[in-house]
Image (cartoon, rainbow, N blue to C red; front, side, top):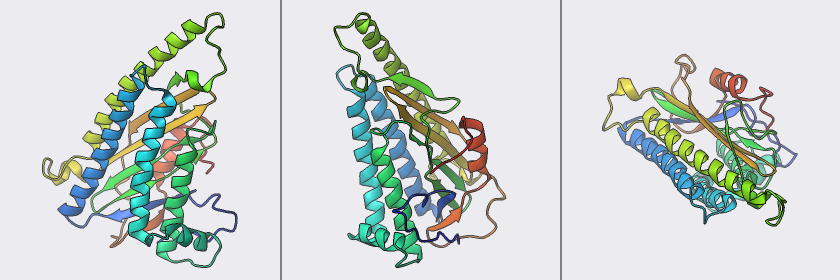
Amino acid sequence: MATLEPRADGGAGVLRGYAVRTPLPDEDAERMFHSNMQTIAEGRERKAELLADPAVSVADAYEEEVQRVATTFEGRLRHLAGENYESVAREYLRGERNDRIGRLTAYYTEGLWRIQQRSTISEMLFFPLILRYPDSFTVNLRFTDDYTTTESIPFESPEHTTVDADETYSQQYFNESQYEQKQAAEYLRQTAQIIRDEFPSPDEAPFSERKYGGIVSAGGRHESEFSEMLARVTPDPDRFSEAVTEPTLVREGSEARRTARRYLQSAKVEM
């Protein structure tokens, strides 16, 4: 098990270099994992639907996504540490506890806080990595002080700009922004299918076809420009030599370094 040291700096760096590994001991656990990944795919399709709607702002589309993700994280935190999960996280960060529950709670709490800030802070990229192995899966919450990747789809958000509706060429800008949002929506729909393909149901695919799978995604913002990316990742079959019986923190694997080199312009995860 990885040893994530208590932090005295309010949580900065608590995520860097770590992932949560969760066991998949049987098909019931696999079904739960599959259901969670389906929910992520459906959320991506819902965001696509909102981005394609001229009556819905980019801010509103992202706010709905944040609320959906927050609900998921809060449920996980309550399951881990109870209703007072924020106190558990603070105790860990102050160095008052250093147990498995404290480490996991601090990890998810810090991730939730950063996700909630993502659409309001310029130049912070959410860069998560989800990997499926034969007996477990890992979730690596990563953030960088950038806003895009080498393969991201960019699109403008007029609500986040200072362009005045009465300015010359403003209508052209708004029309082009709407076109970019529709292009991004189509990209989100297409890449939602990658999630479904990488994490099939145990009731529909043999074990040989579902024991490995992976995705990396990225979403960021620089002033009025937003960006999205999602791609397949091949897990390292030699990453783990021992099974786990409960969720635990582990050091990130070679897949994290590989995806950082391929997709990040600076090739460095800052947070």
